[in-house]
Image 1 (cartoon, one colour):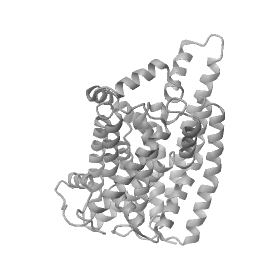
Image 2: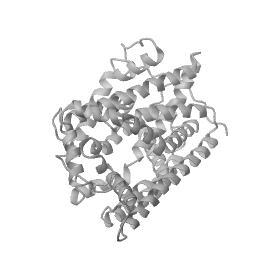
Image 3: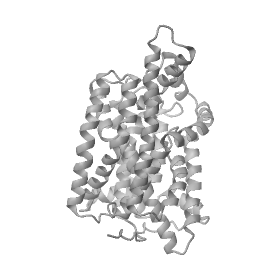
Image 4: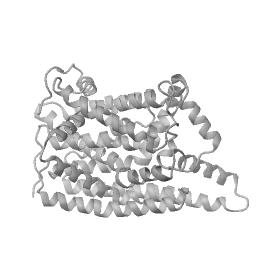
Length: 418
């Protein structure tokens, strides 16, 4: 059966999914704004890992961690196809339009990483998006096959890291570990384990300190971060983008599947993903968040089943959004302005947590962060729809589009639906 044609029009289900994804990403990113980086993966490192804090970590680990980022990557791949299709329909060069967008997105991402927050993902999407362009004409079943190969490659890479952590743990138990063993163990501990009091003190001082010192530190780390992200998660990101392309071409993301097919994939995705994730959460916590169980359960094993949960999330959102309504309209507007909302979140959260703002960095427990998340969600939902009733694009979407096309785009008037 041939894949449904991609029409050059606005697809409401994509906007709703994108809205959920950009909101959902903050559930995990809030920890990276508010605490030392290692707390993102290891709750025992900082921010609390008992009682309500443990419950919050487990909930996020089971339902959110990696899934919203993956969903956003799916949408990025699908949007790439739509931009190419629309450029072709207007007799524009799809390559010029696409690579122009990726060039400016990369610059936006690097500026975001240096000026606002170290955890930027836009620069990475821009680099991987350049590769994804090569697969724009690939048939859905081939996209899925290539994506599986890429995800297996990612699995092999994280398996290597996991085994290295295990070997380092064993080597440190010998009576006289070598200097190289100690050095490697300390490197793993800084990324996955419990920081020393001195390391924590330096991190807290930096992030509670003046803007100039923080920006200088991020500038120094920008290139290593860009390369490290590309090497360690590039294959996974490209795999997710290709799956997003396949889901668009198959009609899944556009709402063209019948209800039973969506329900079936929801049951497959969550039926497999939730029990395994819950078991891994129990295992990691029962082992006291030791490094090897943590890396095994958060980096290695989820690579295998996480794509099913991402598909499950996408199908659930599409199914729930079919009937429309006020909430779906608000989510769609939030999704249409995902770029502005993503960077706007960084402006808000960096101001709340860093020393040049309110200075709350390191002062709140994990559970105490979520009233802030809910407040930011409310702002996204409240401002996006009224803005698009008056303007065609979000403010940063307009700037990105104007730069990529090298001419100012019309801004006044309600957002177009095609």
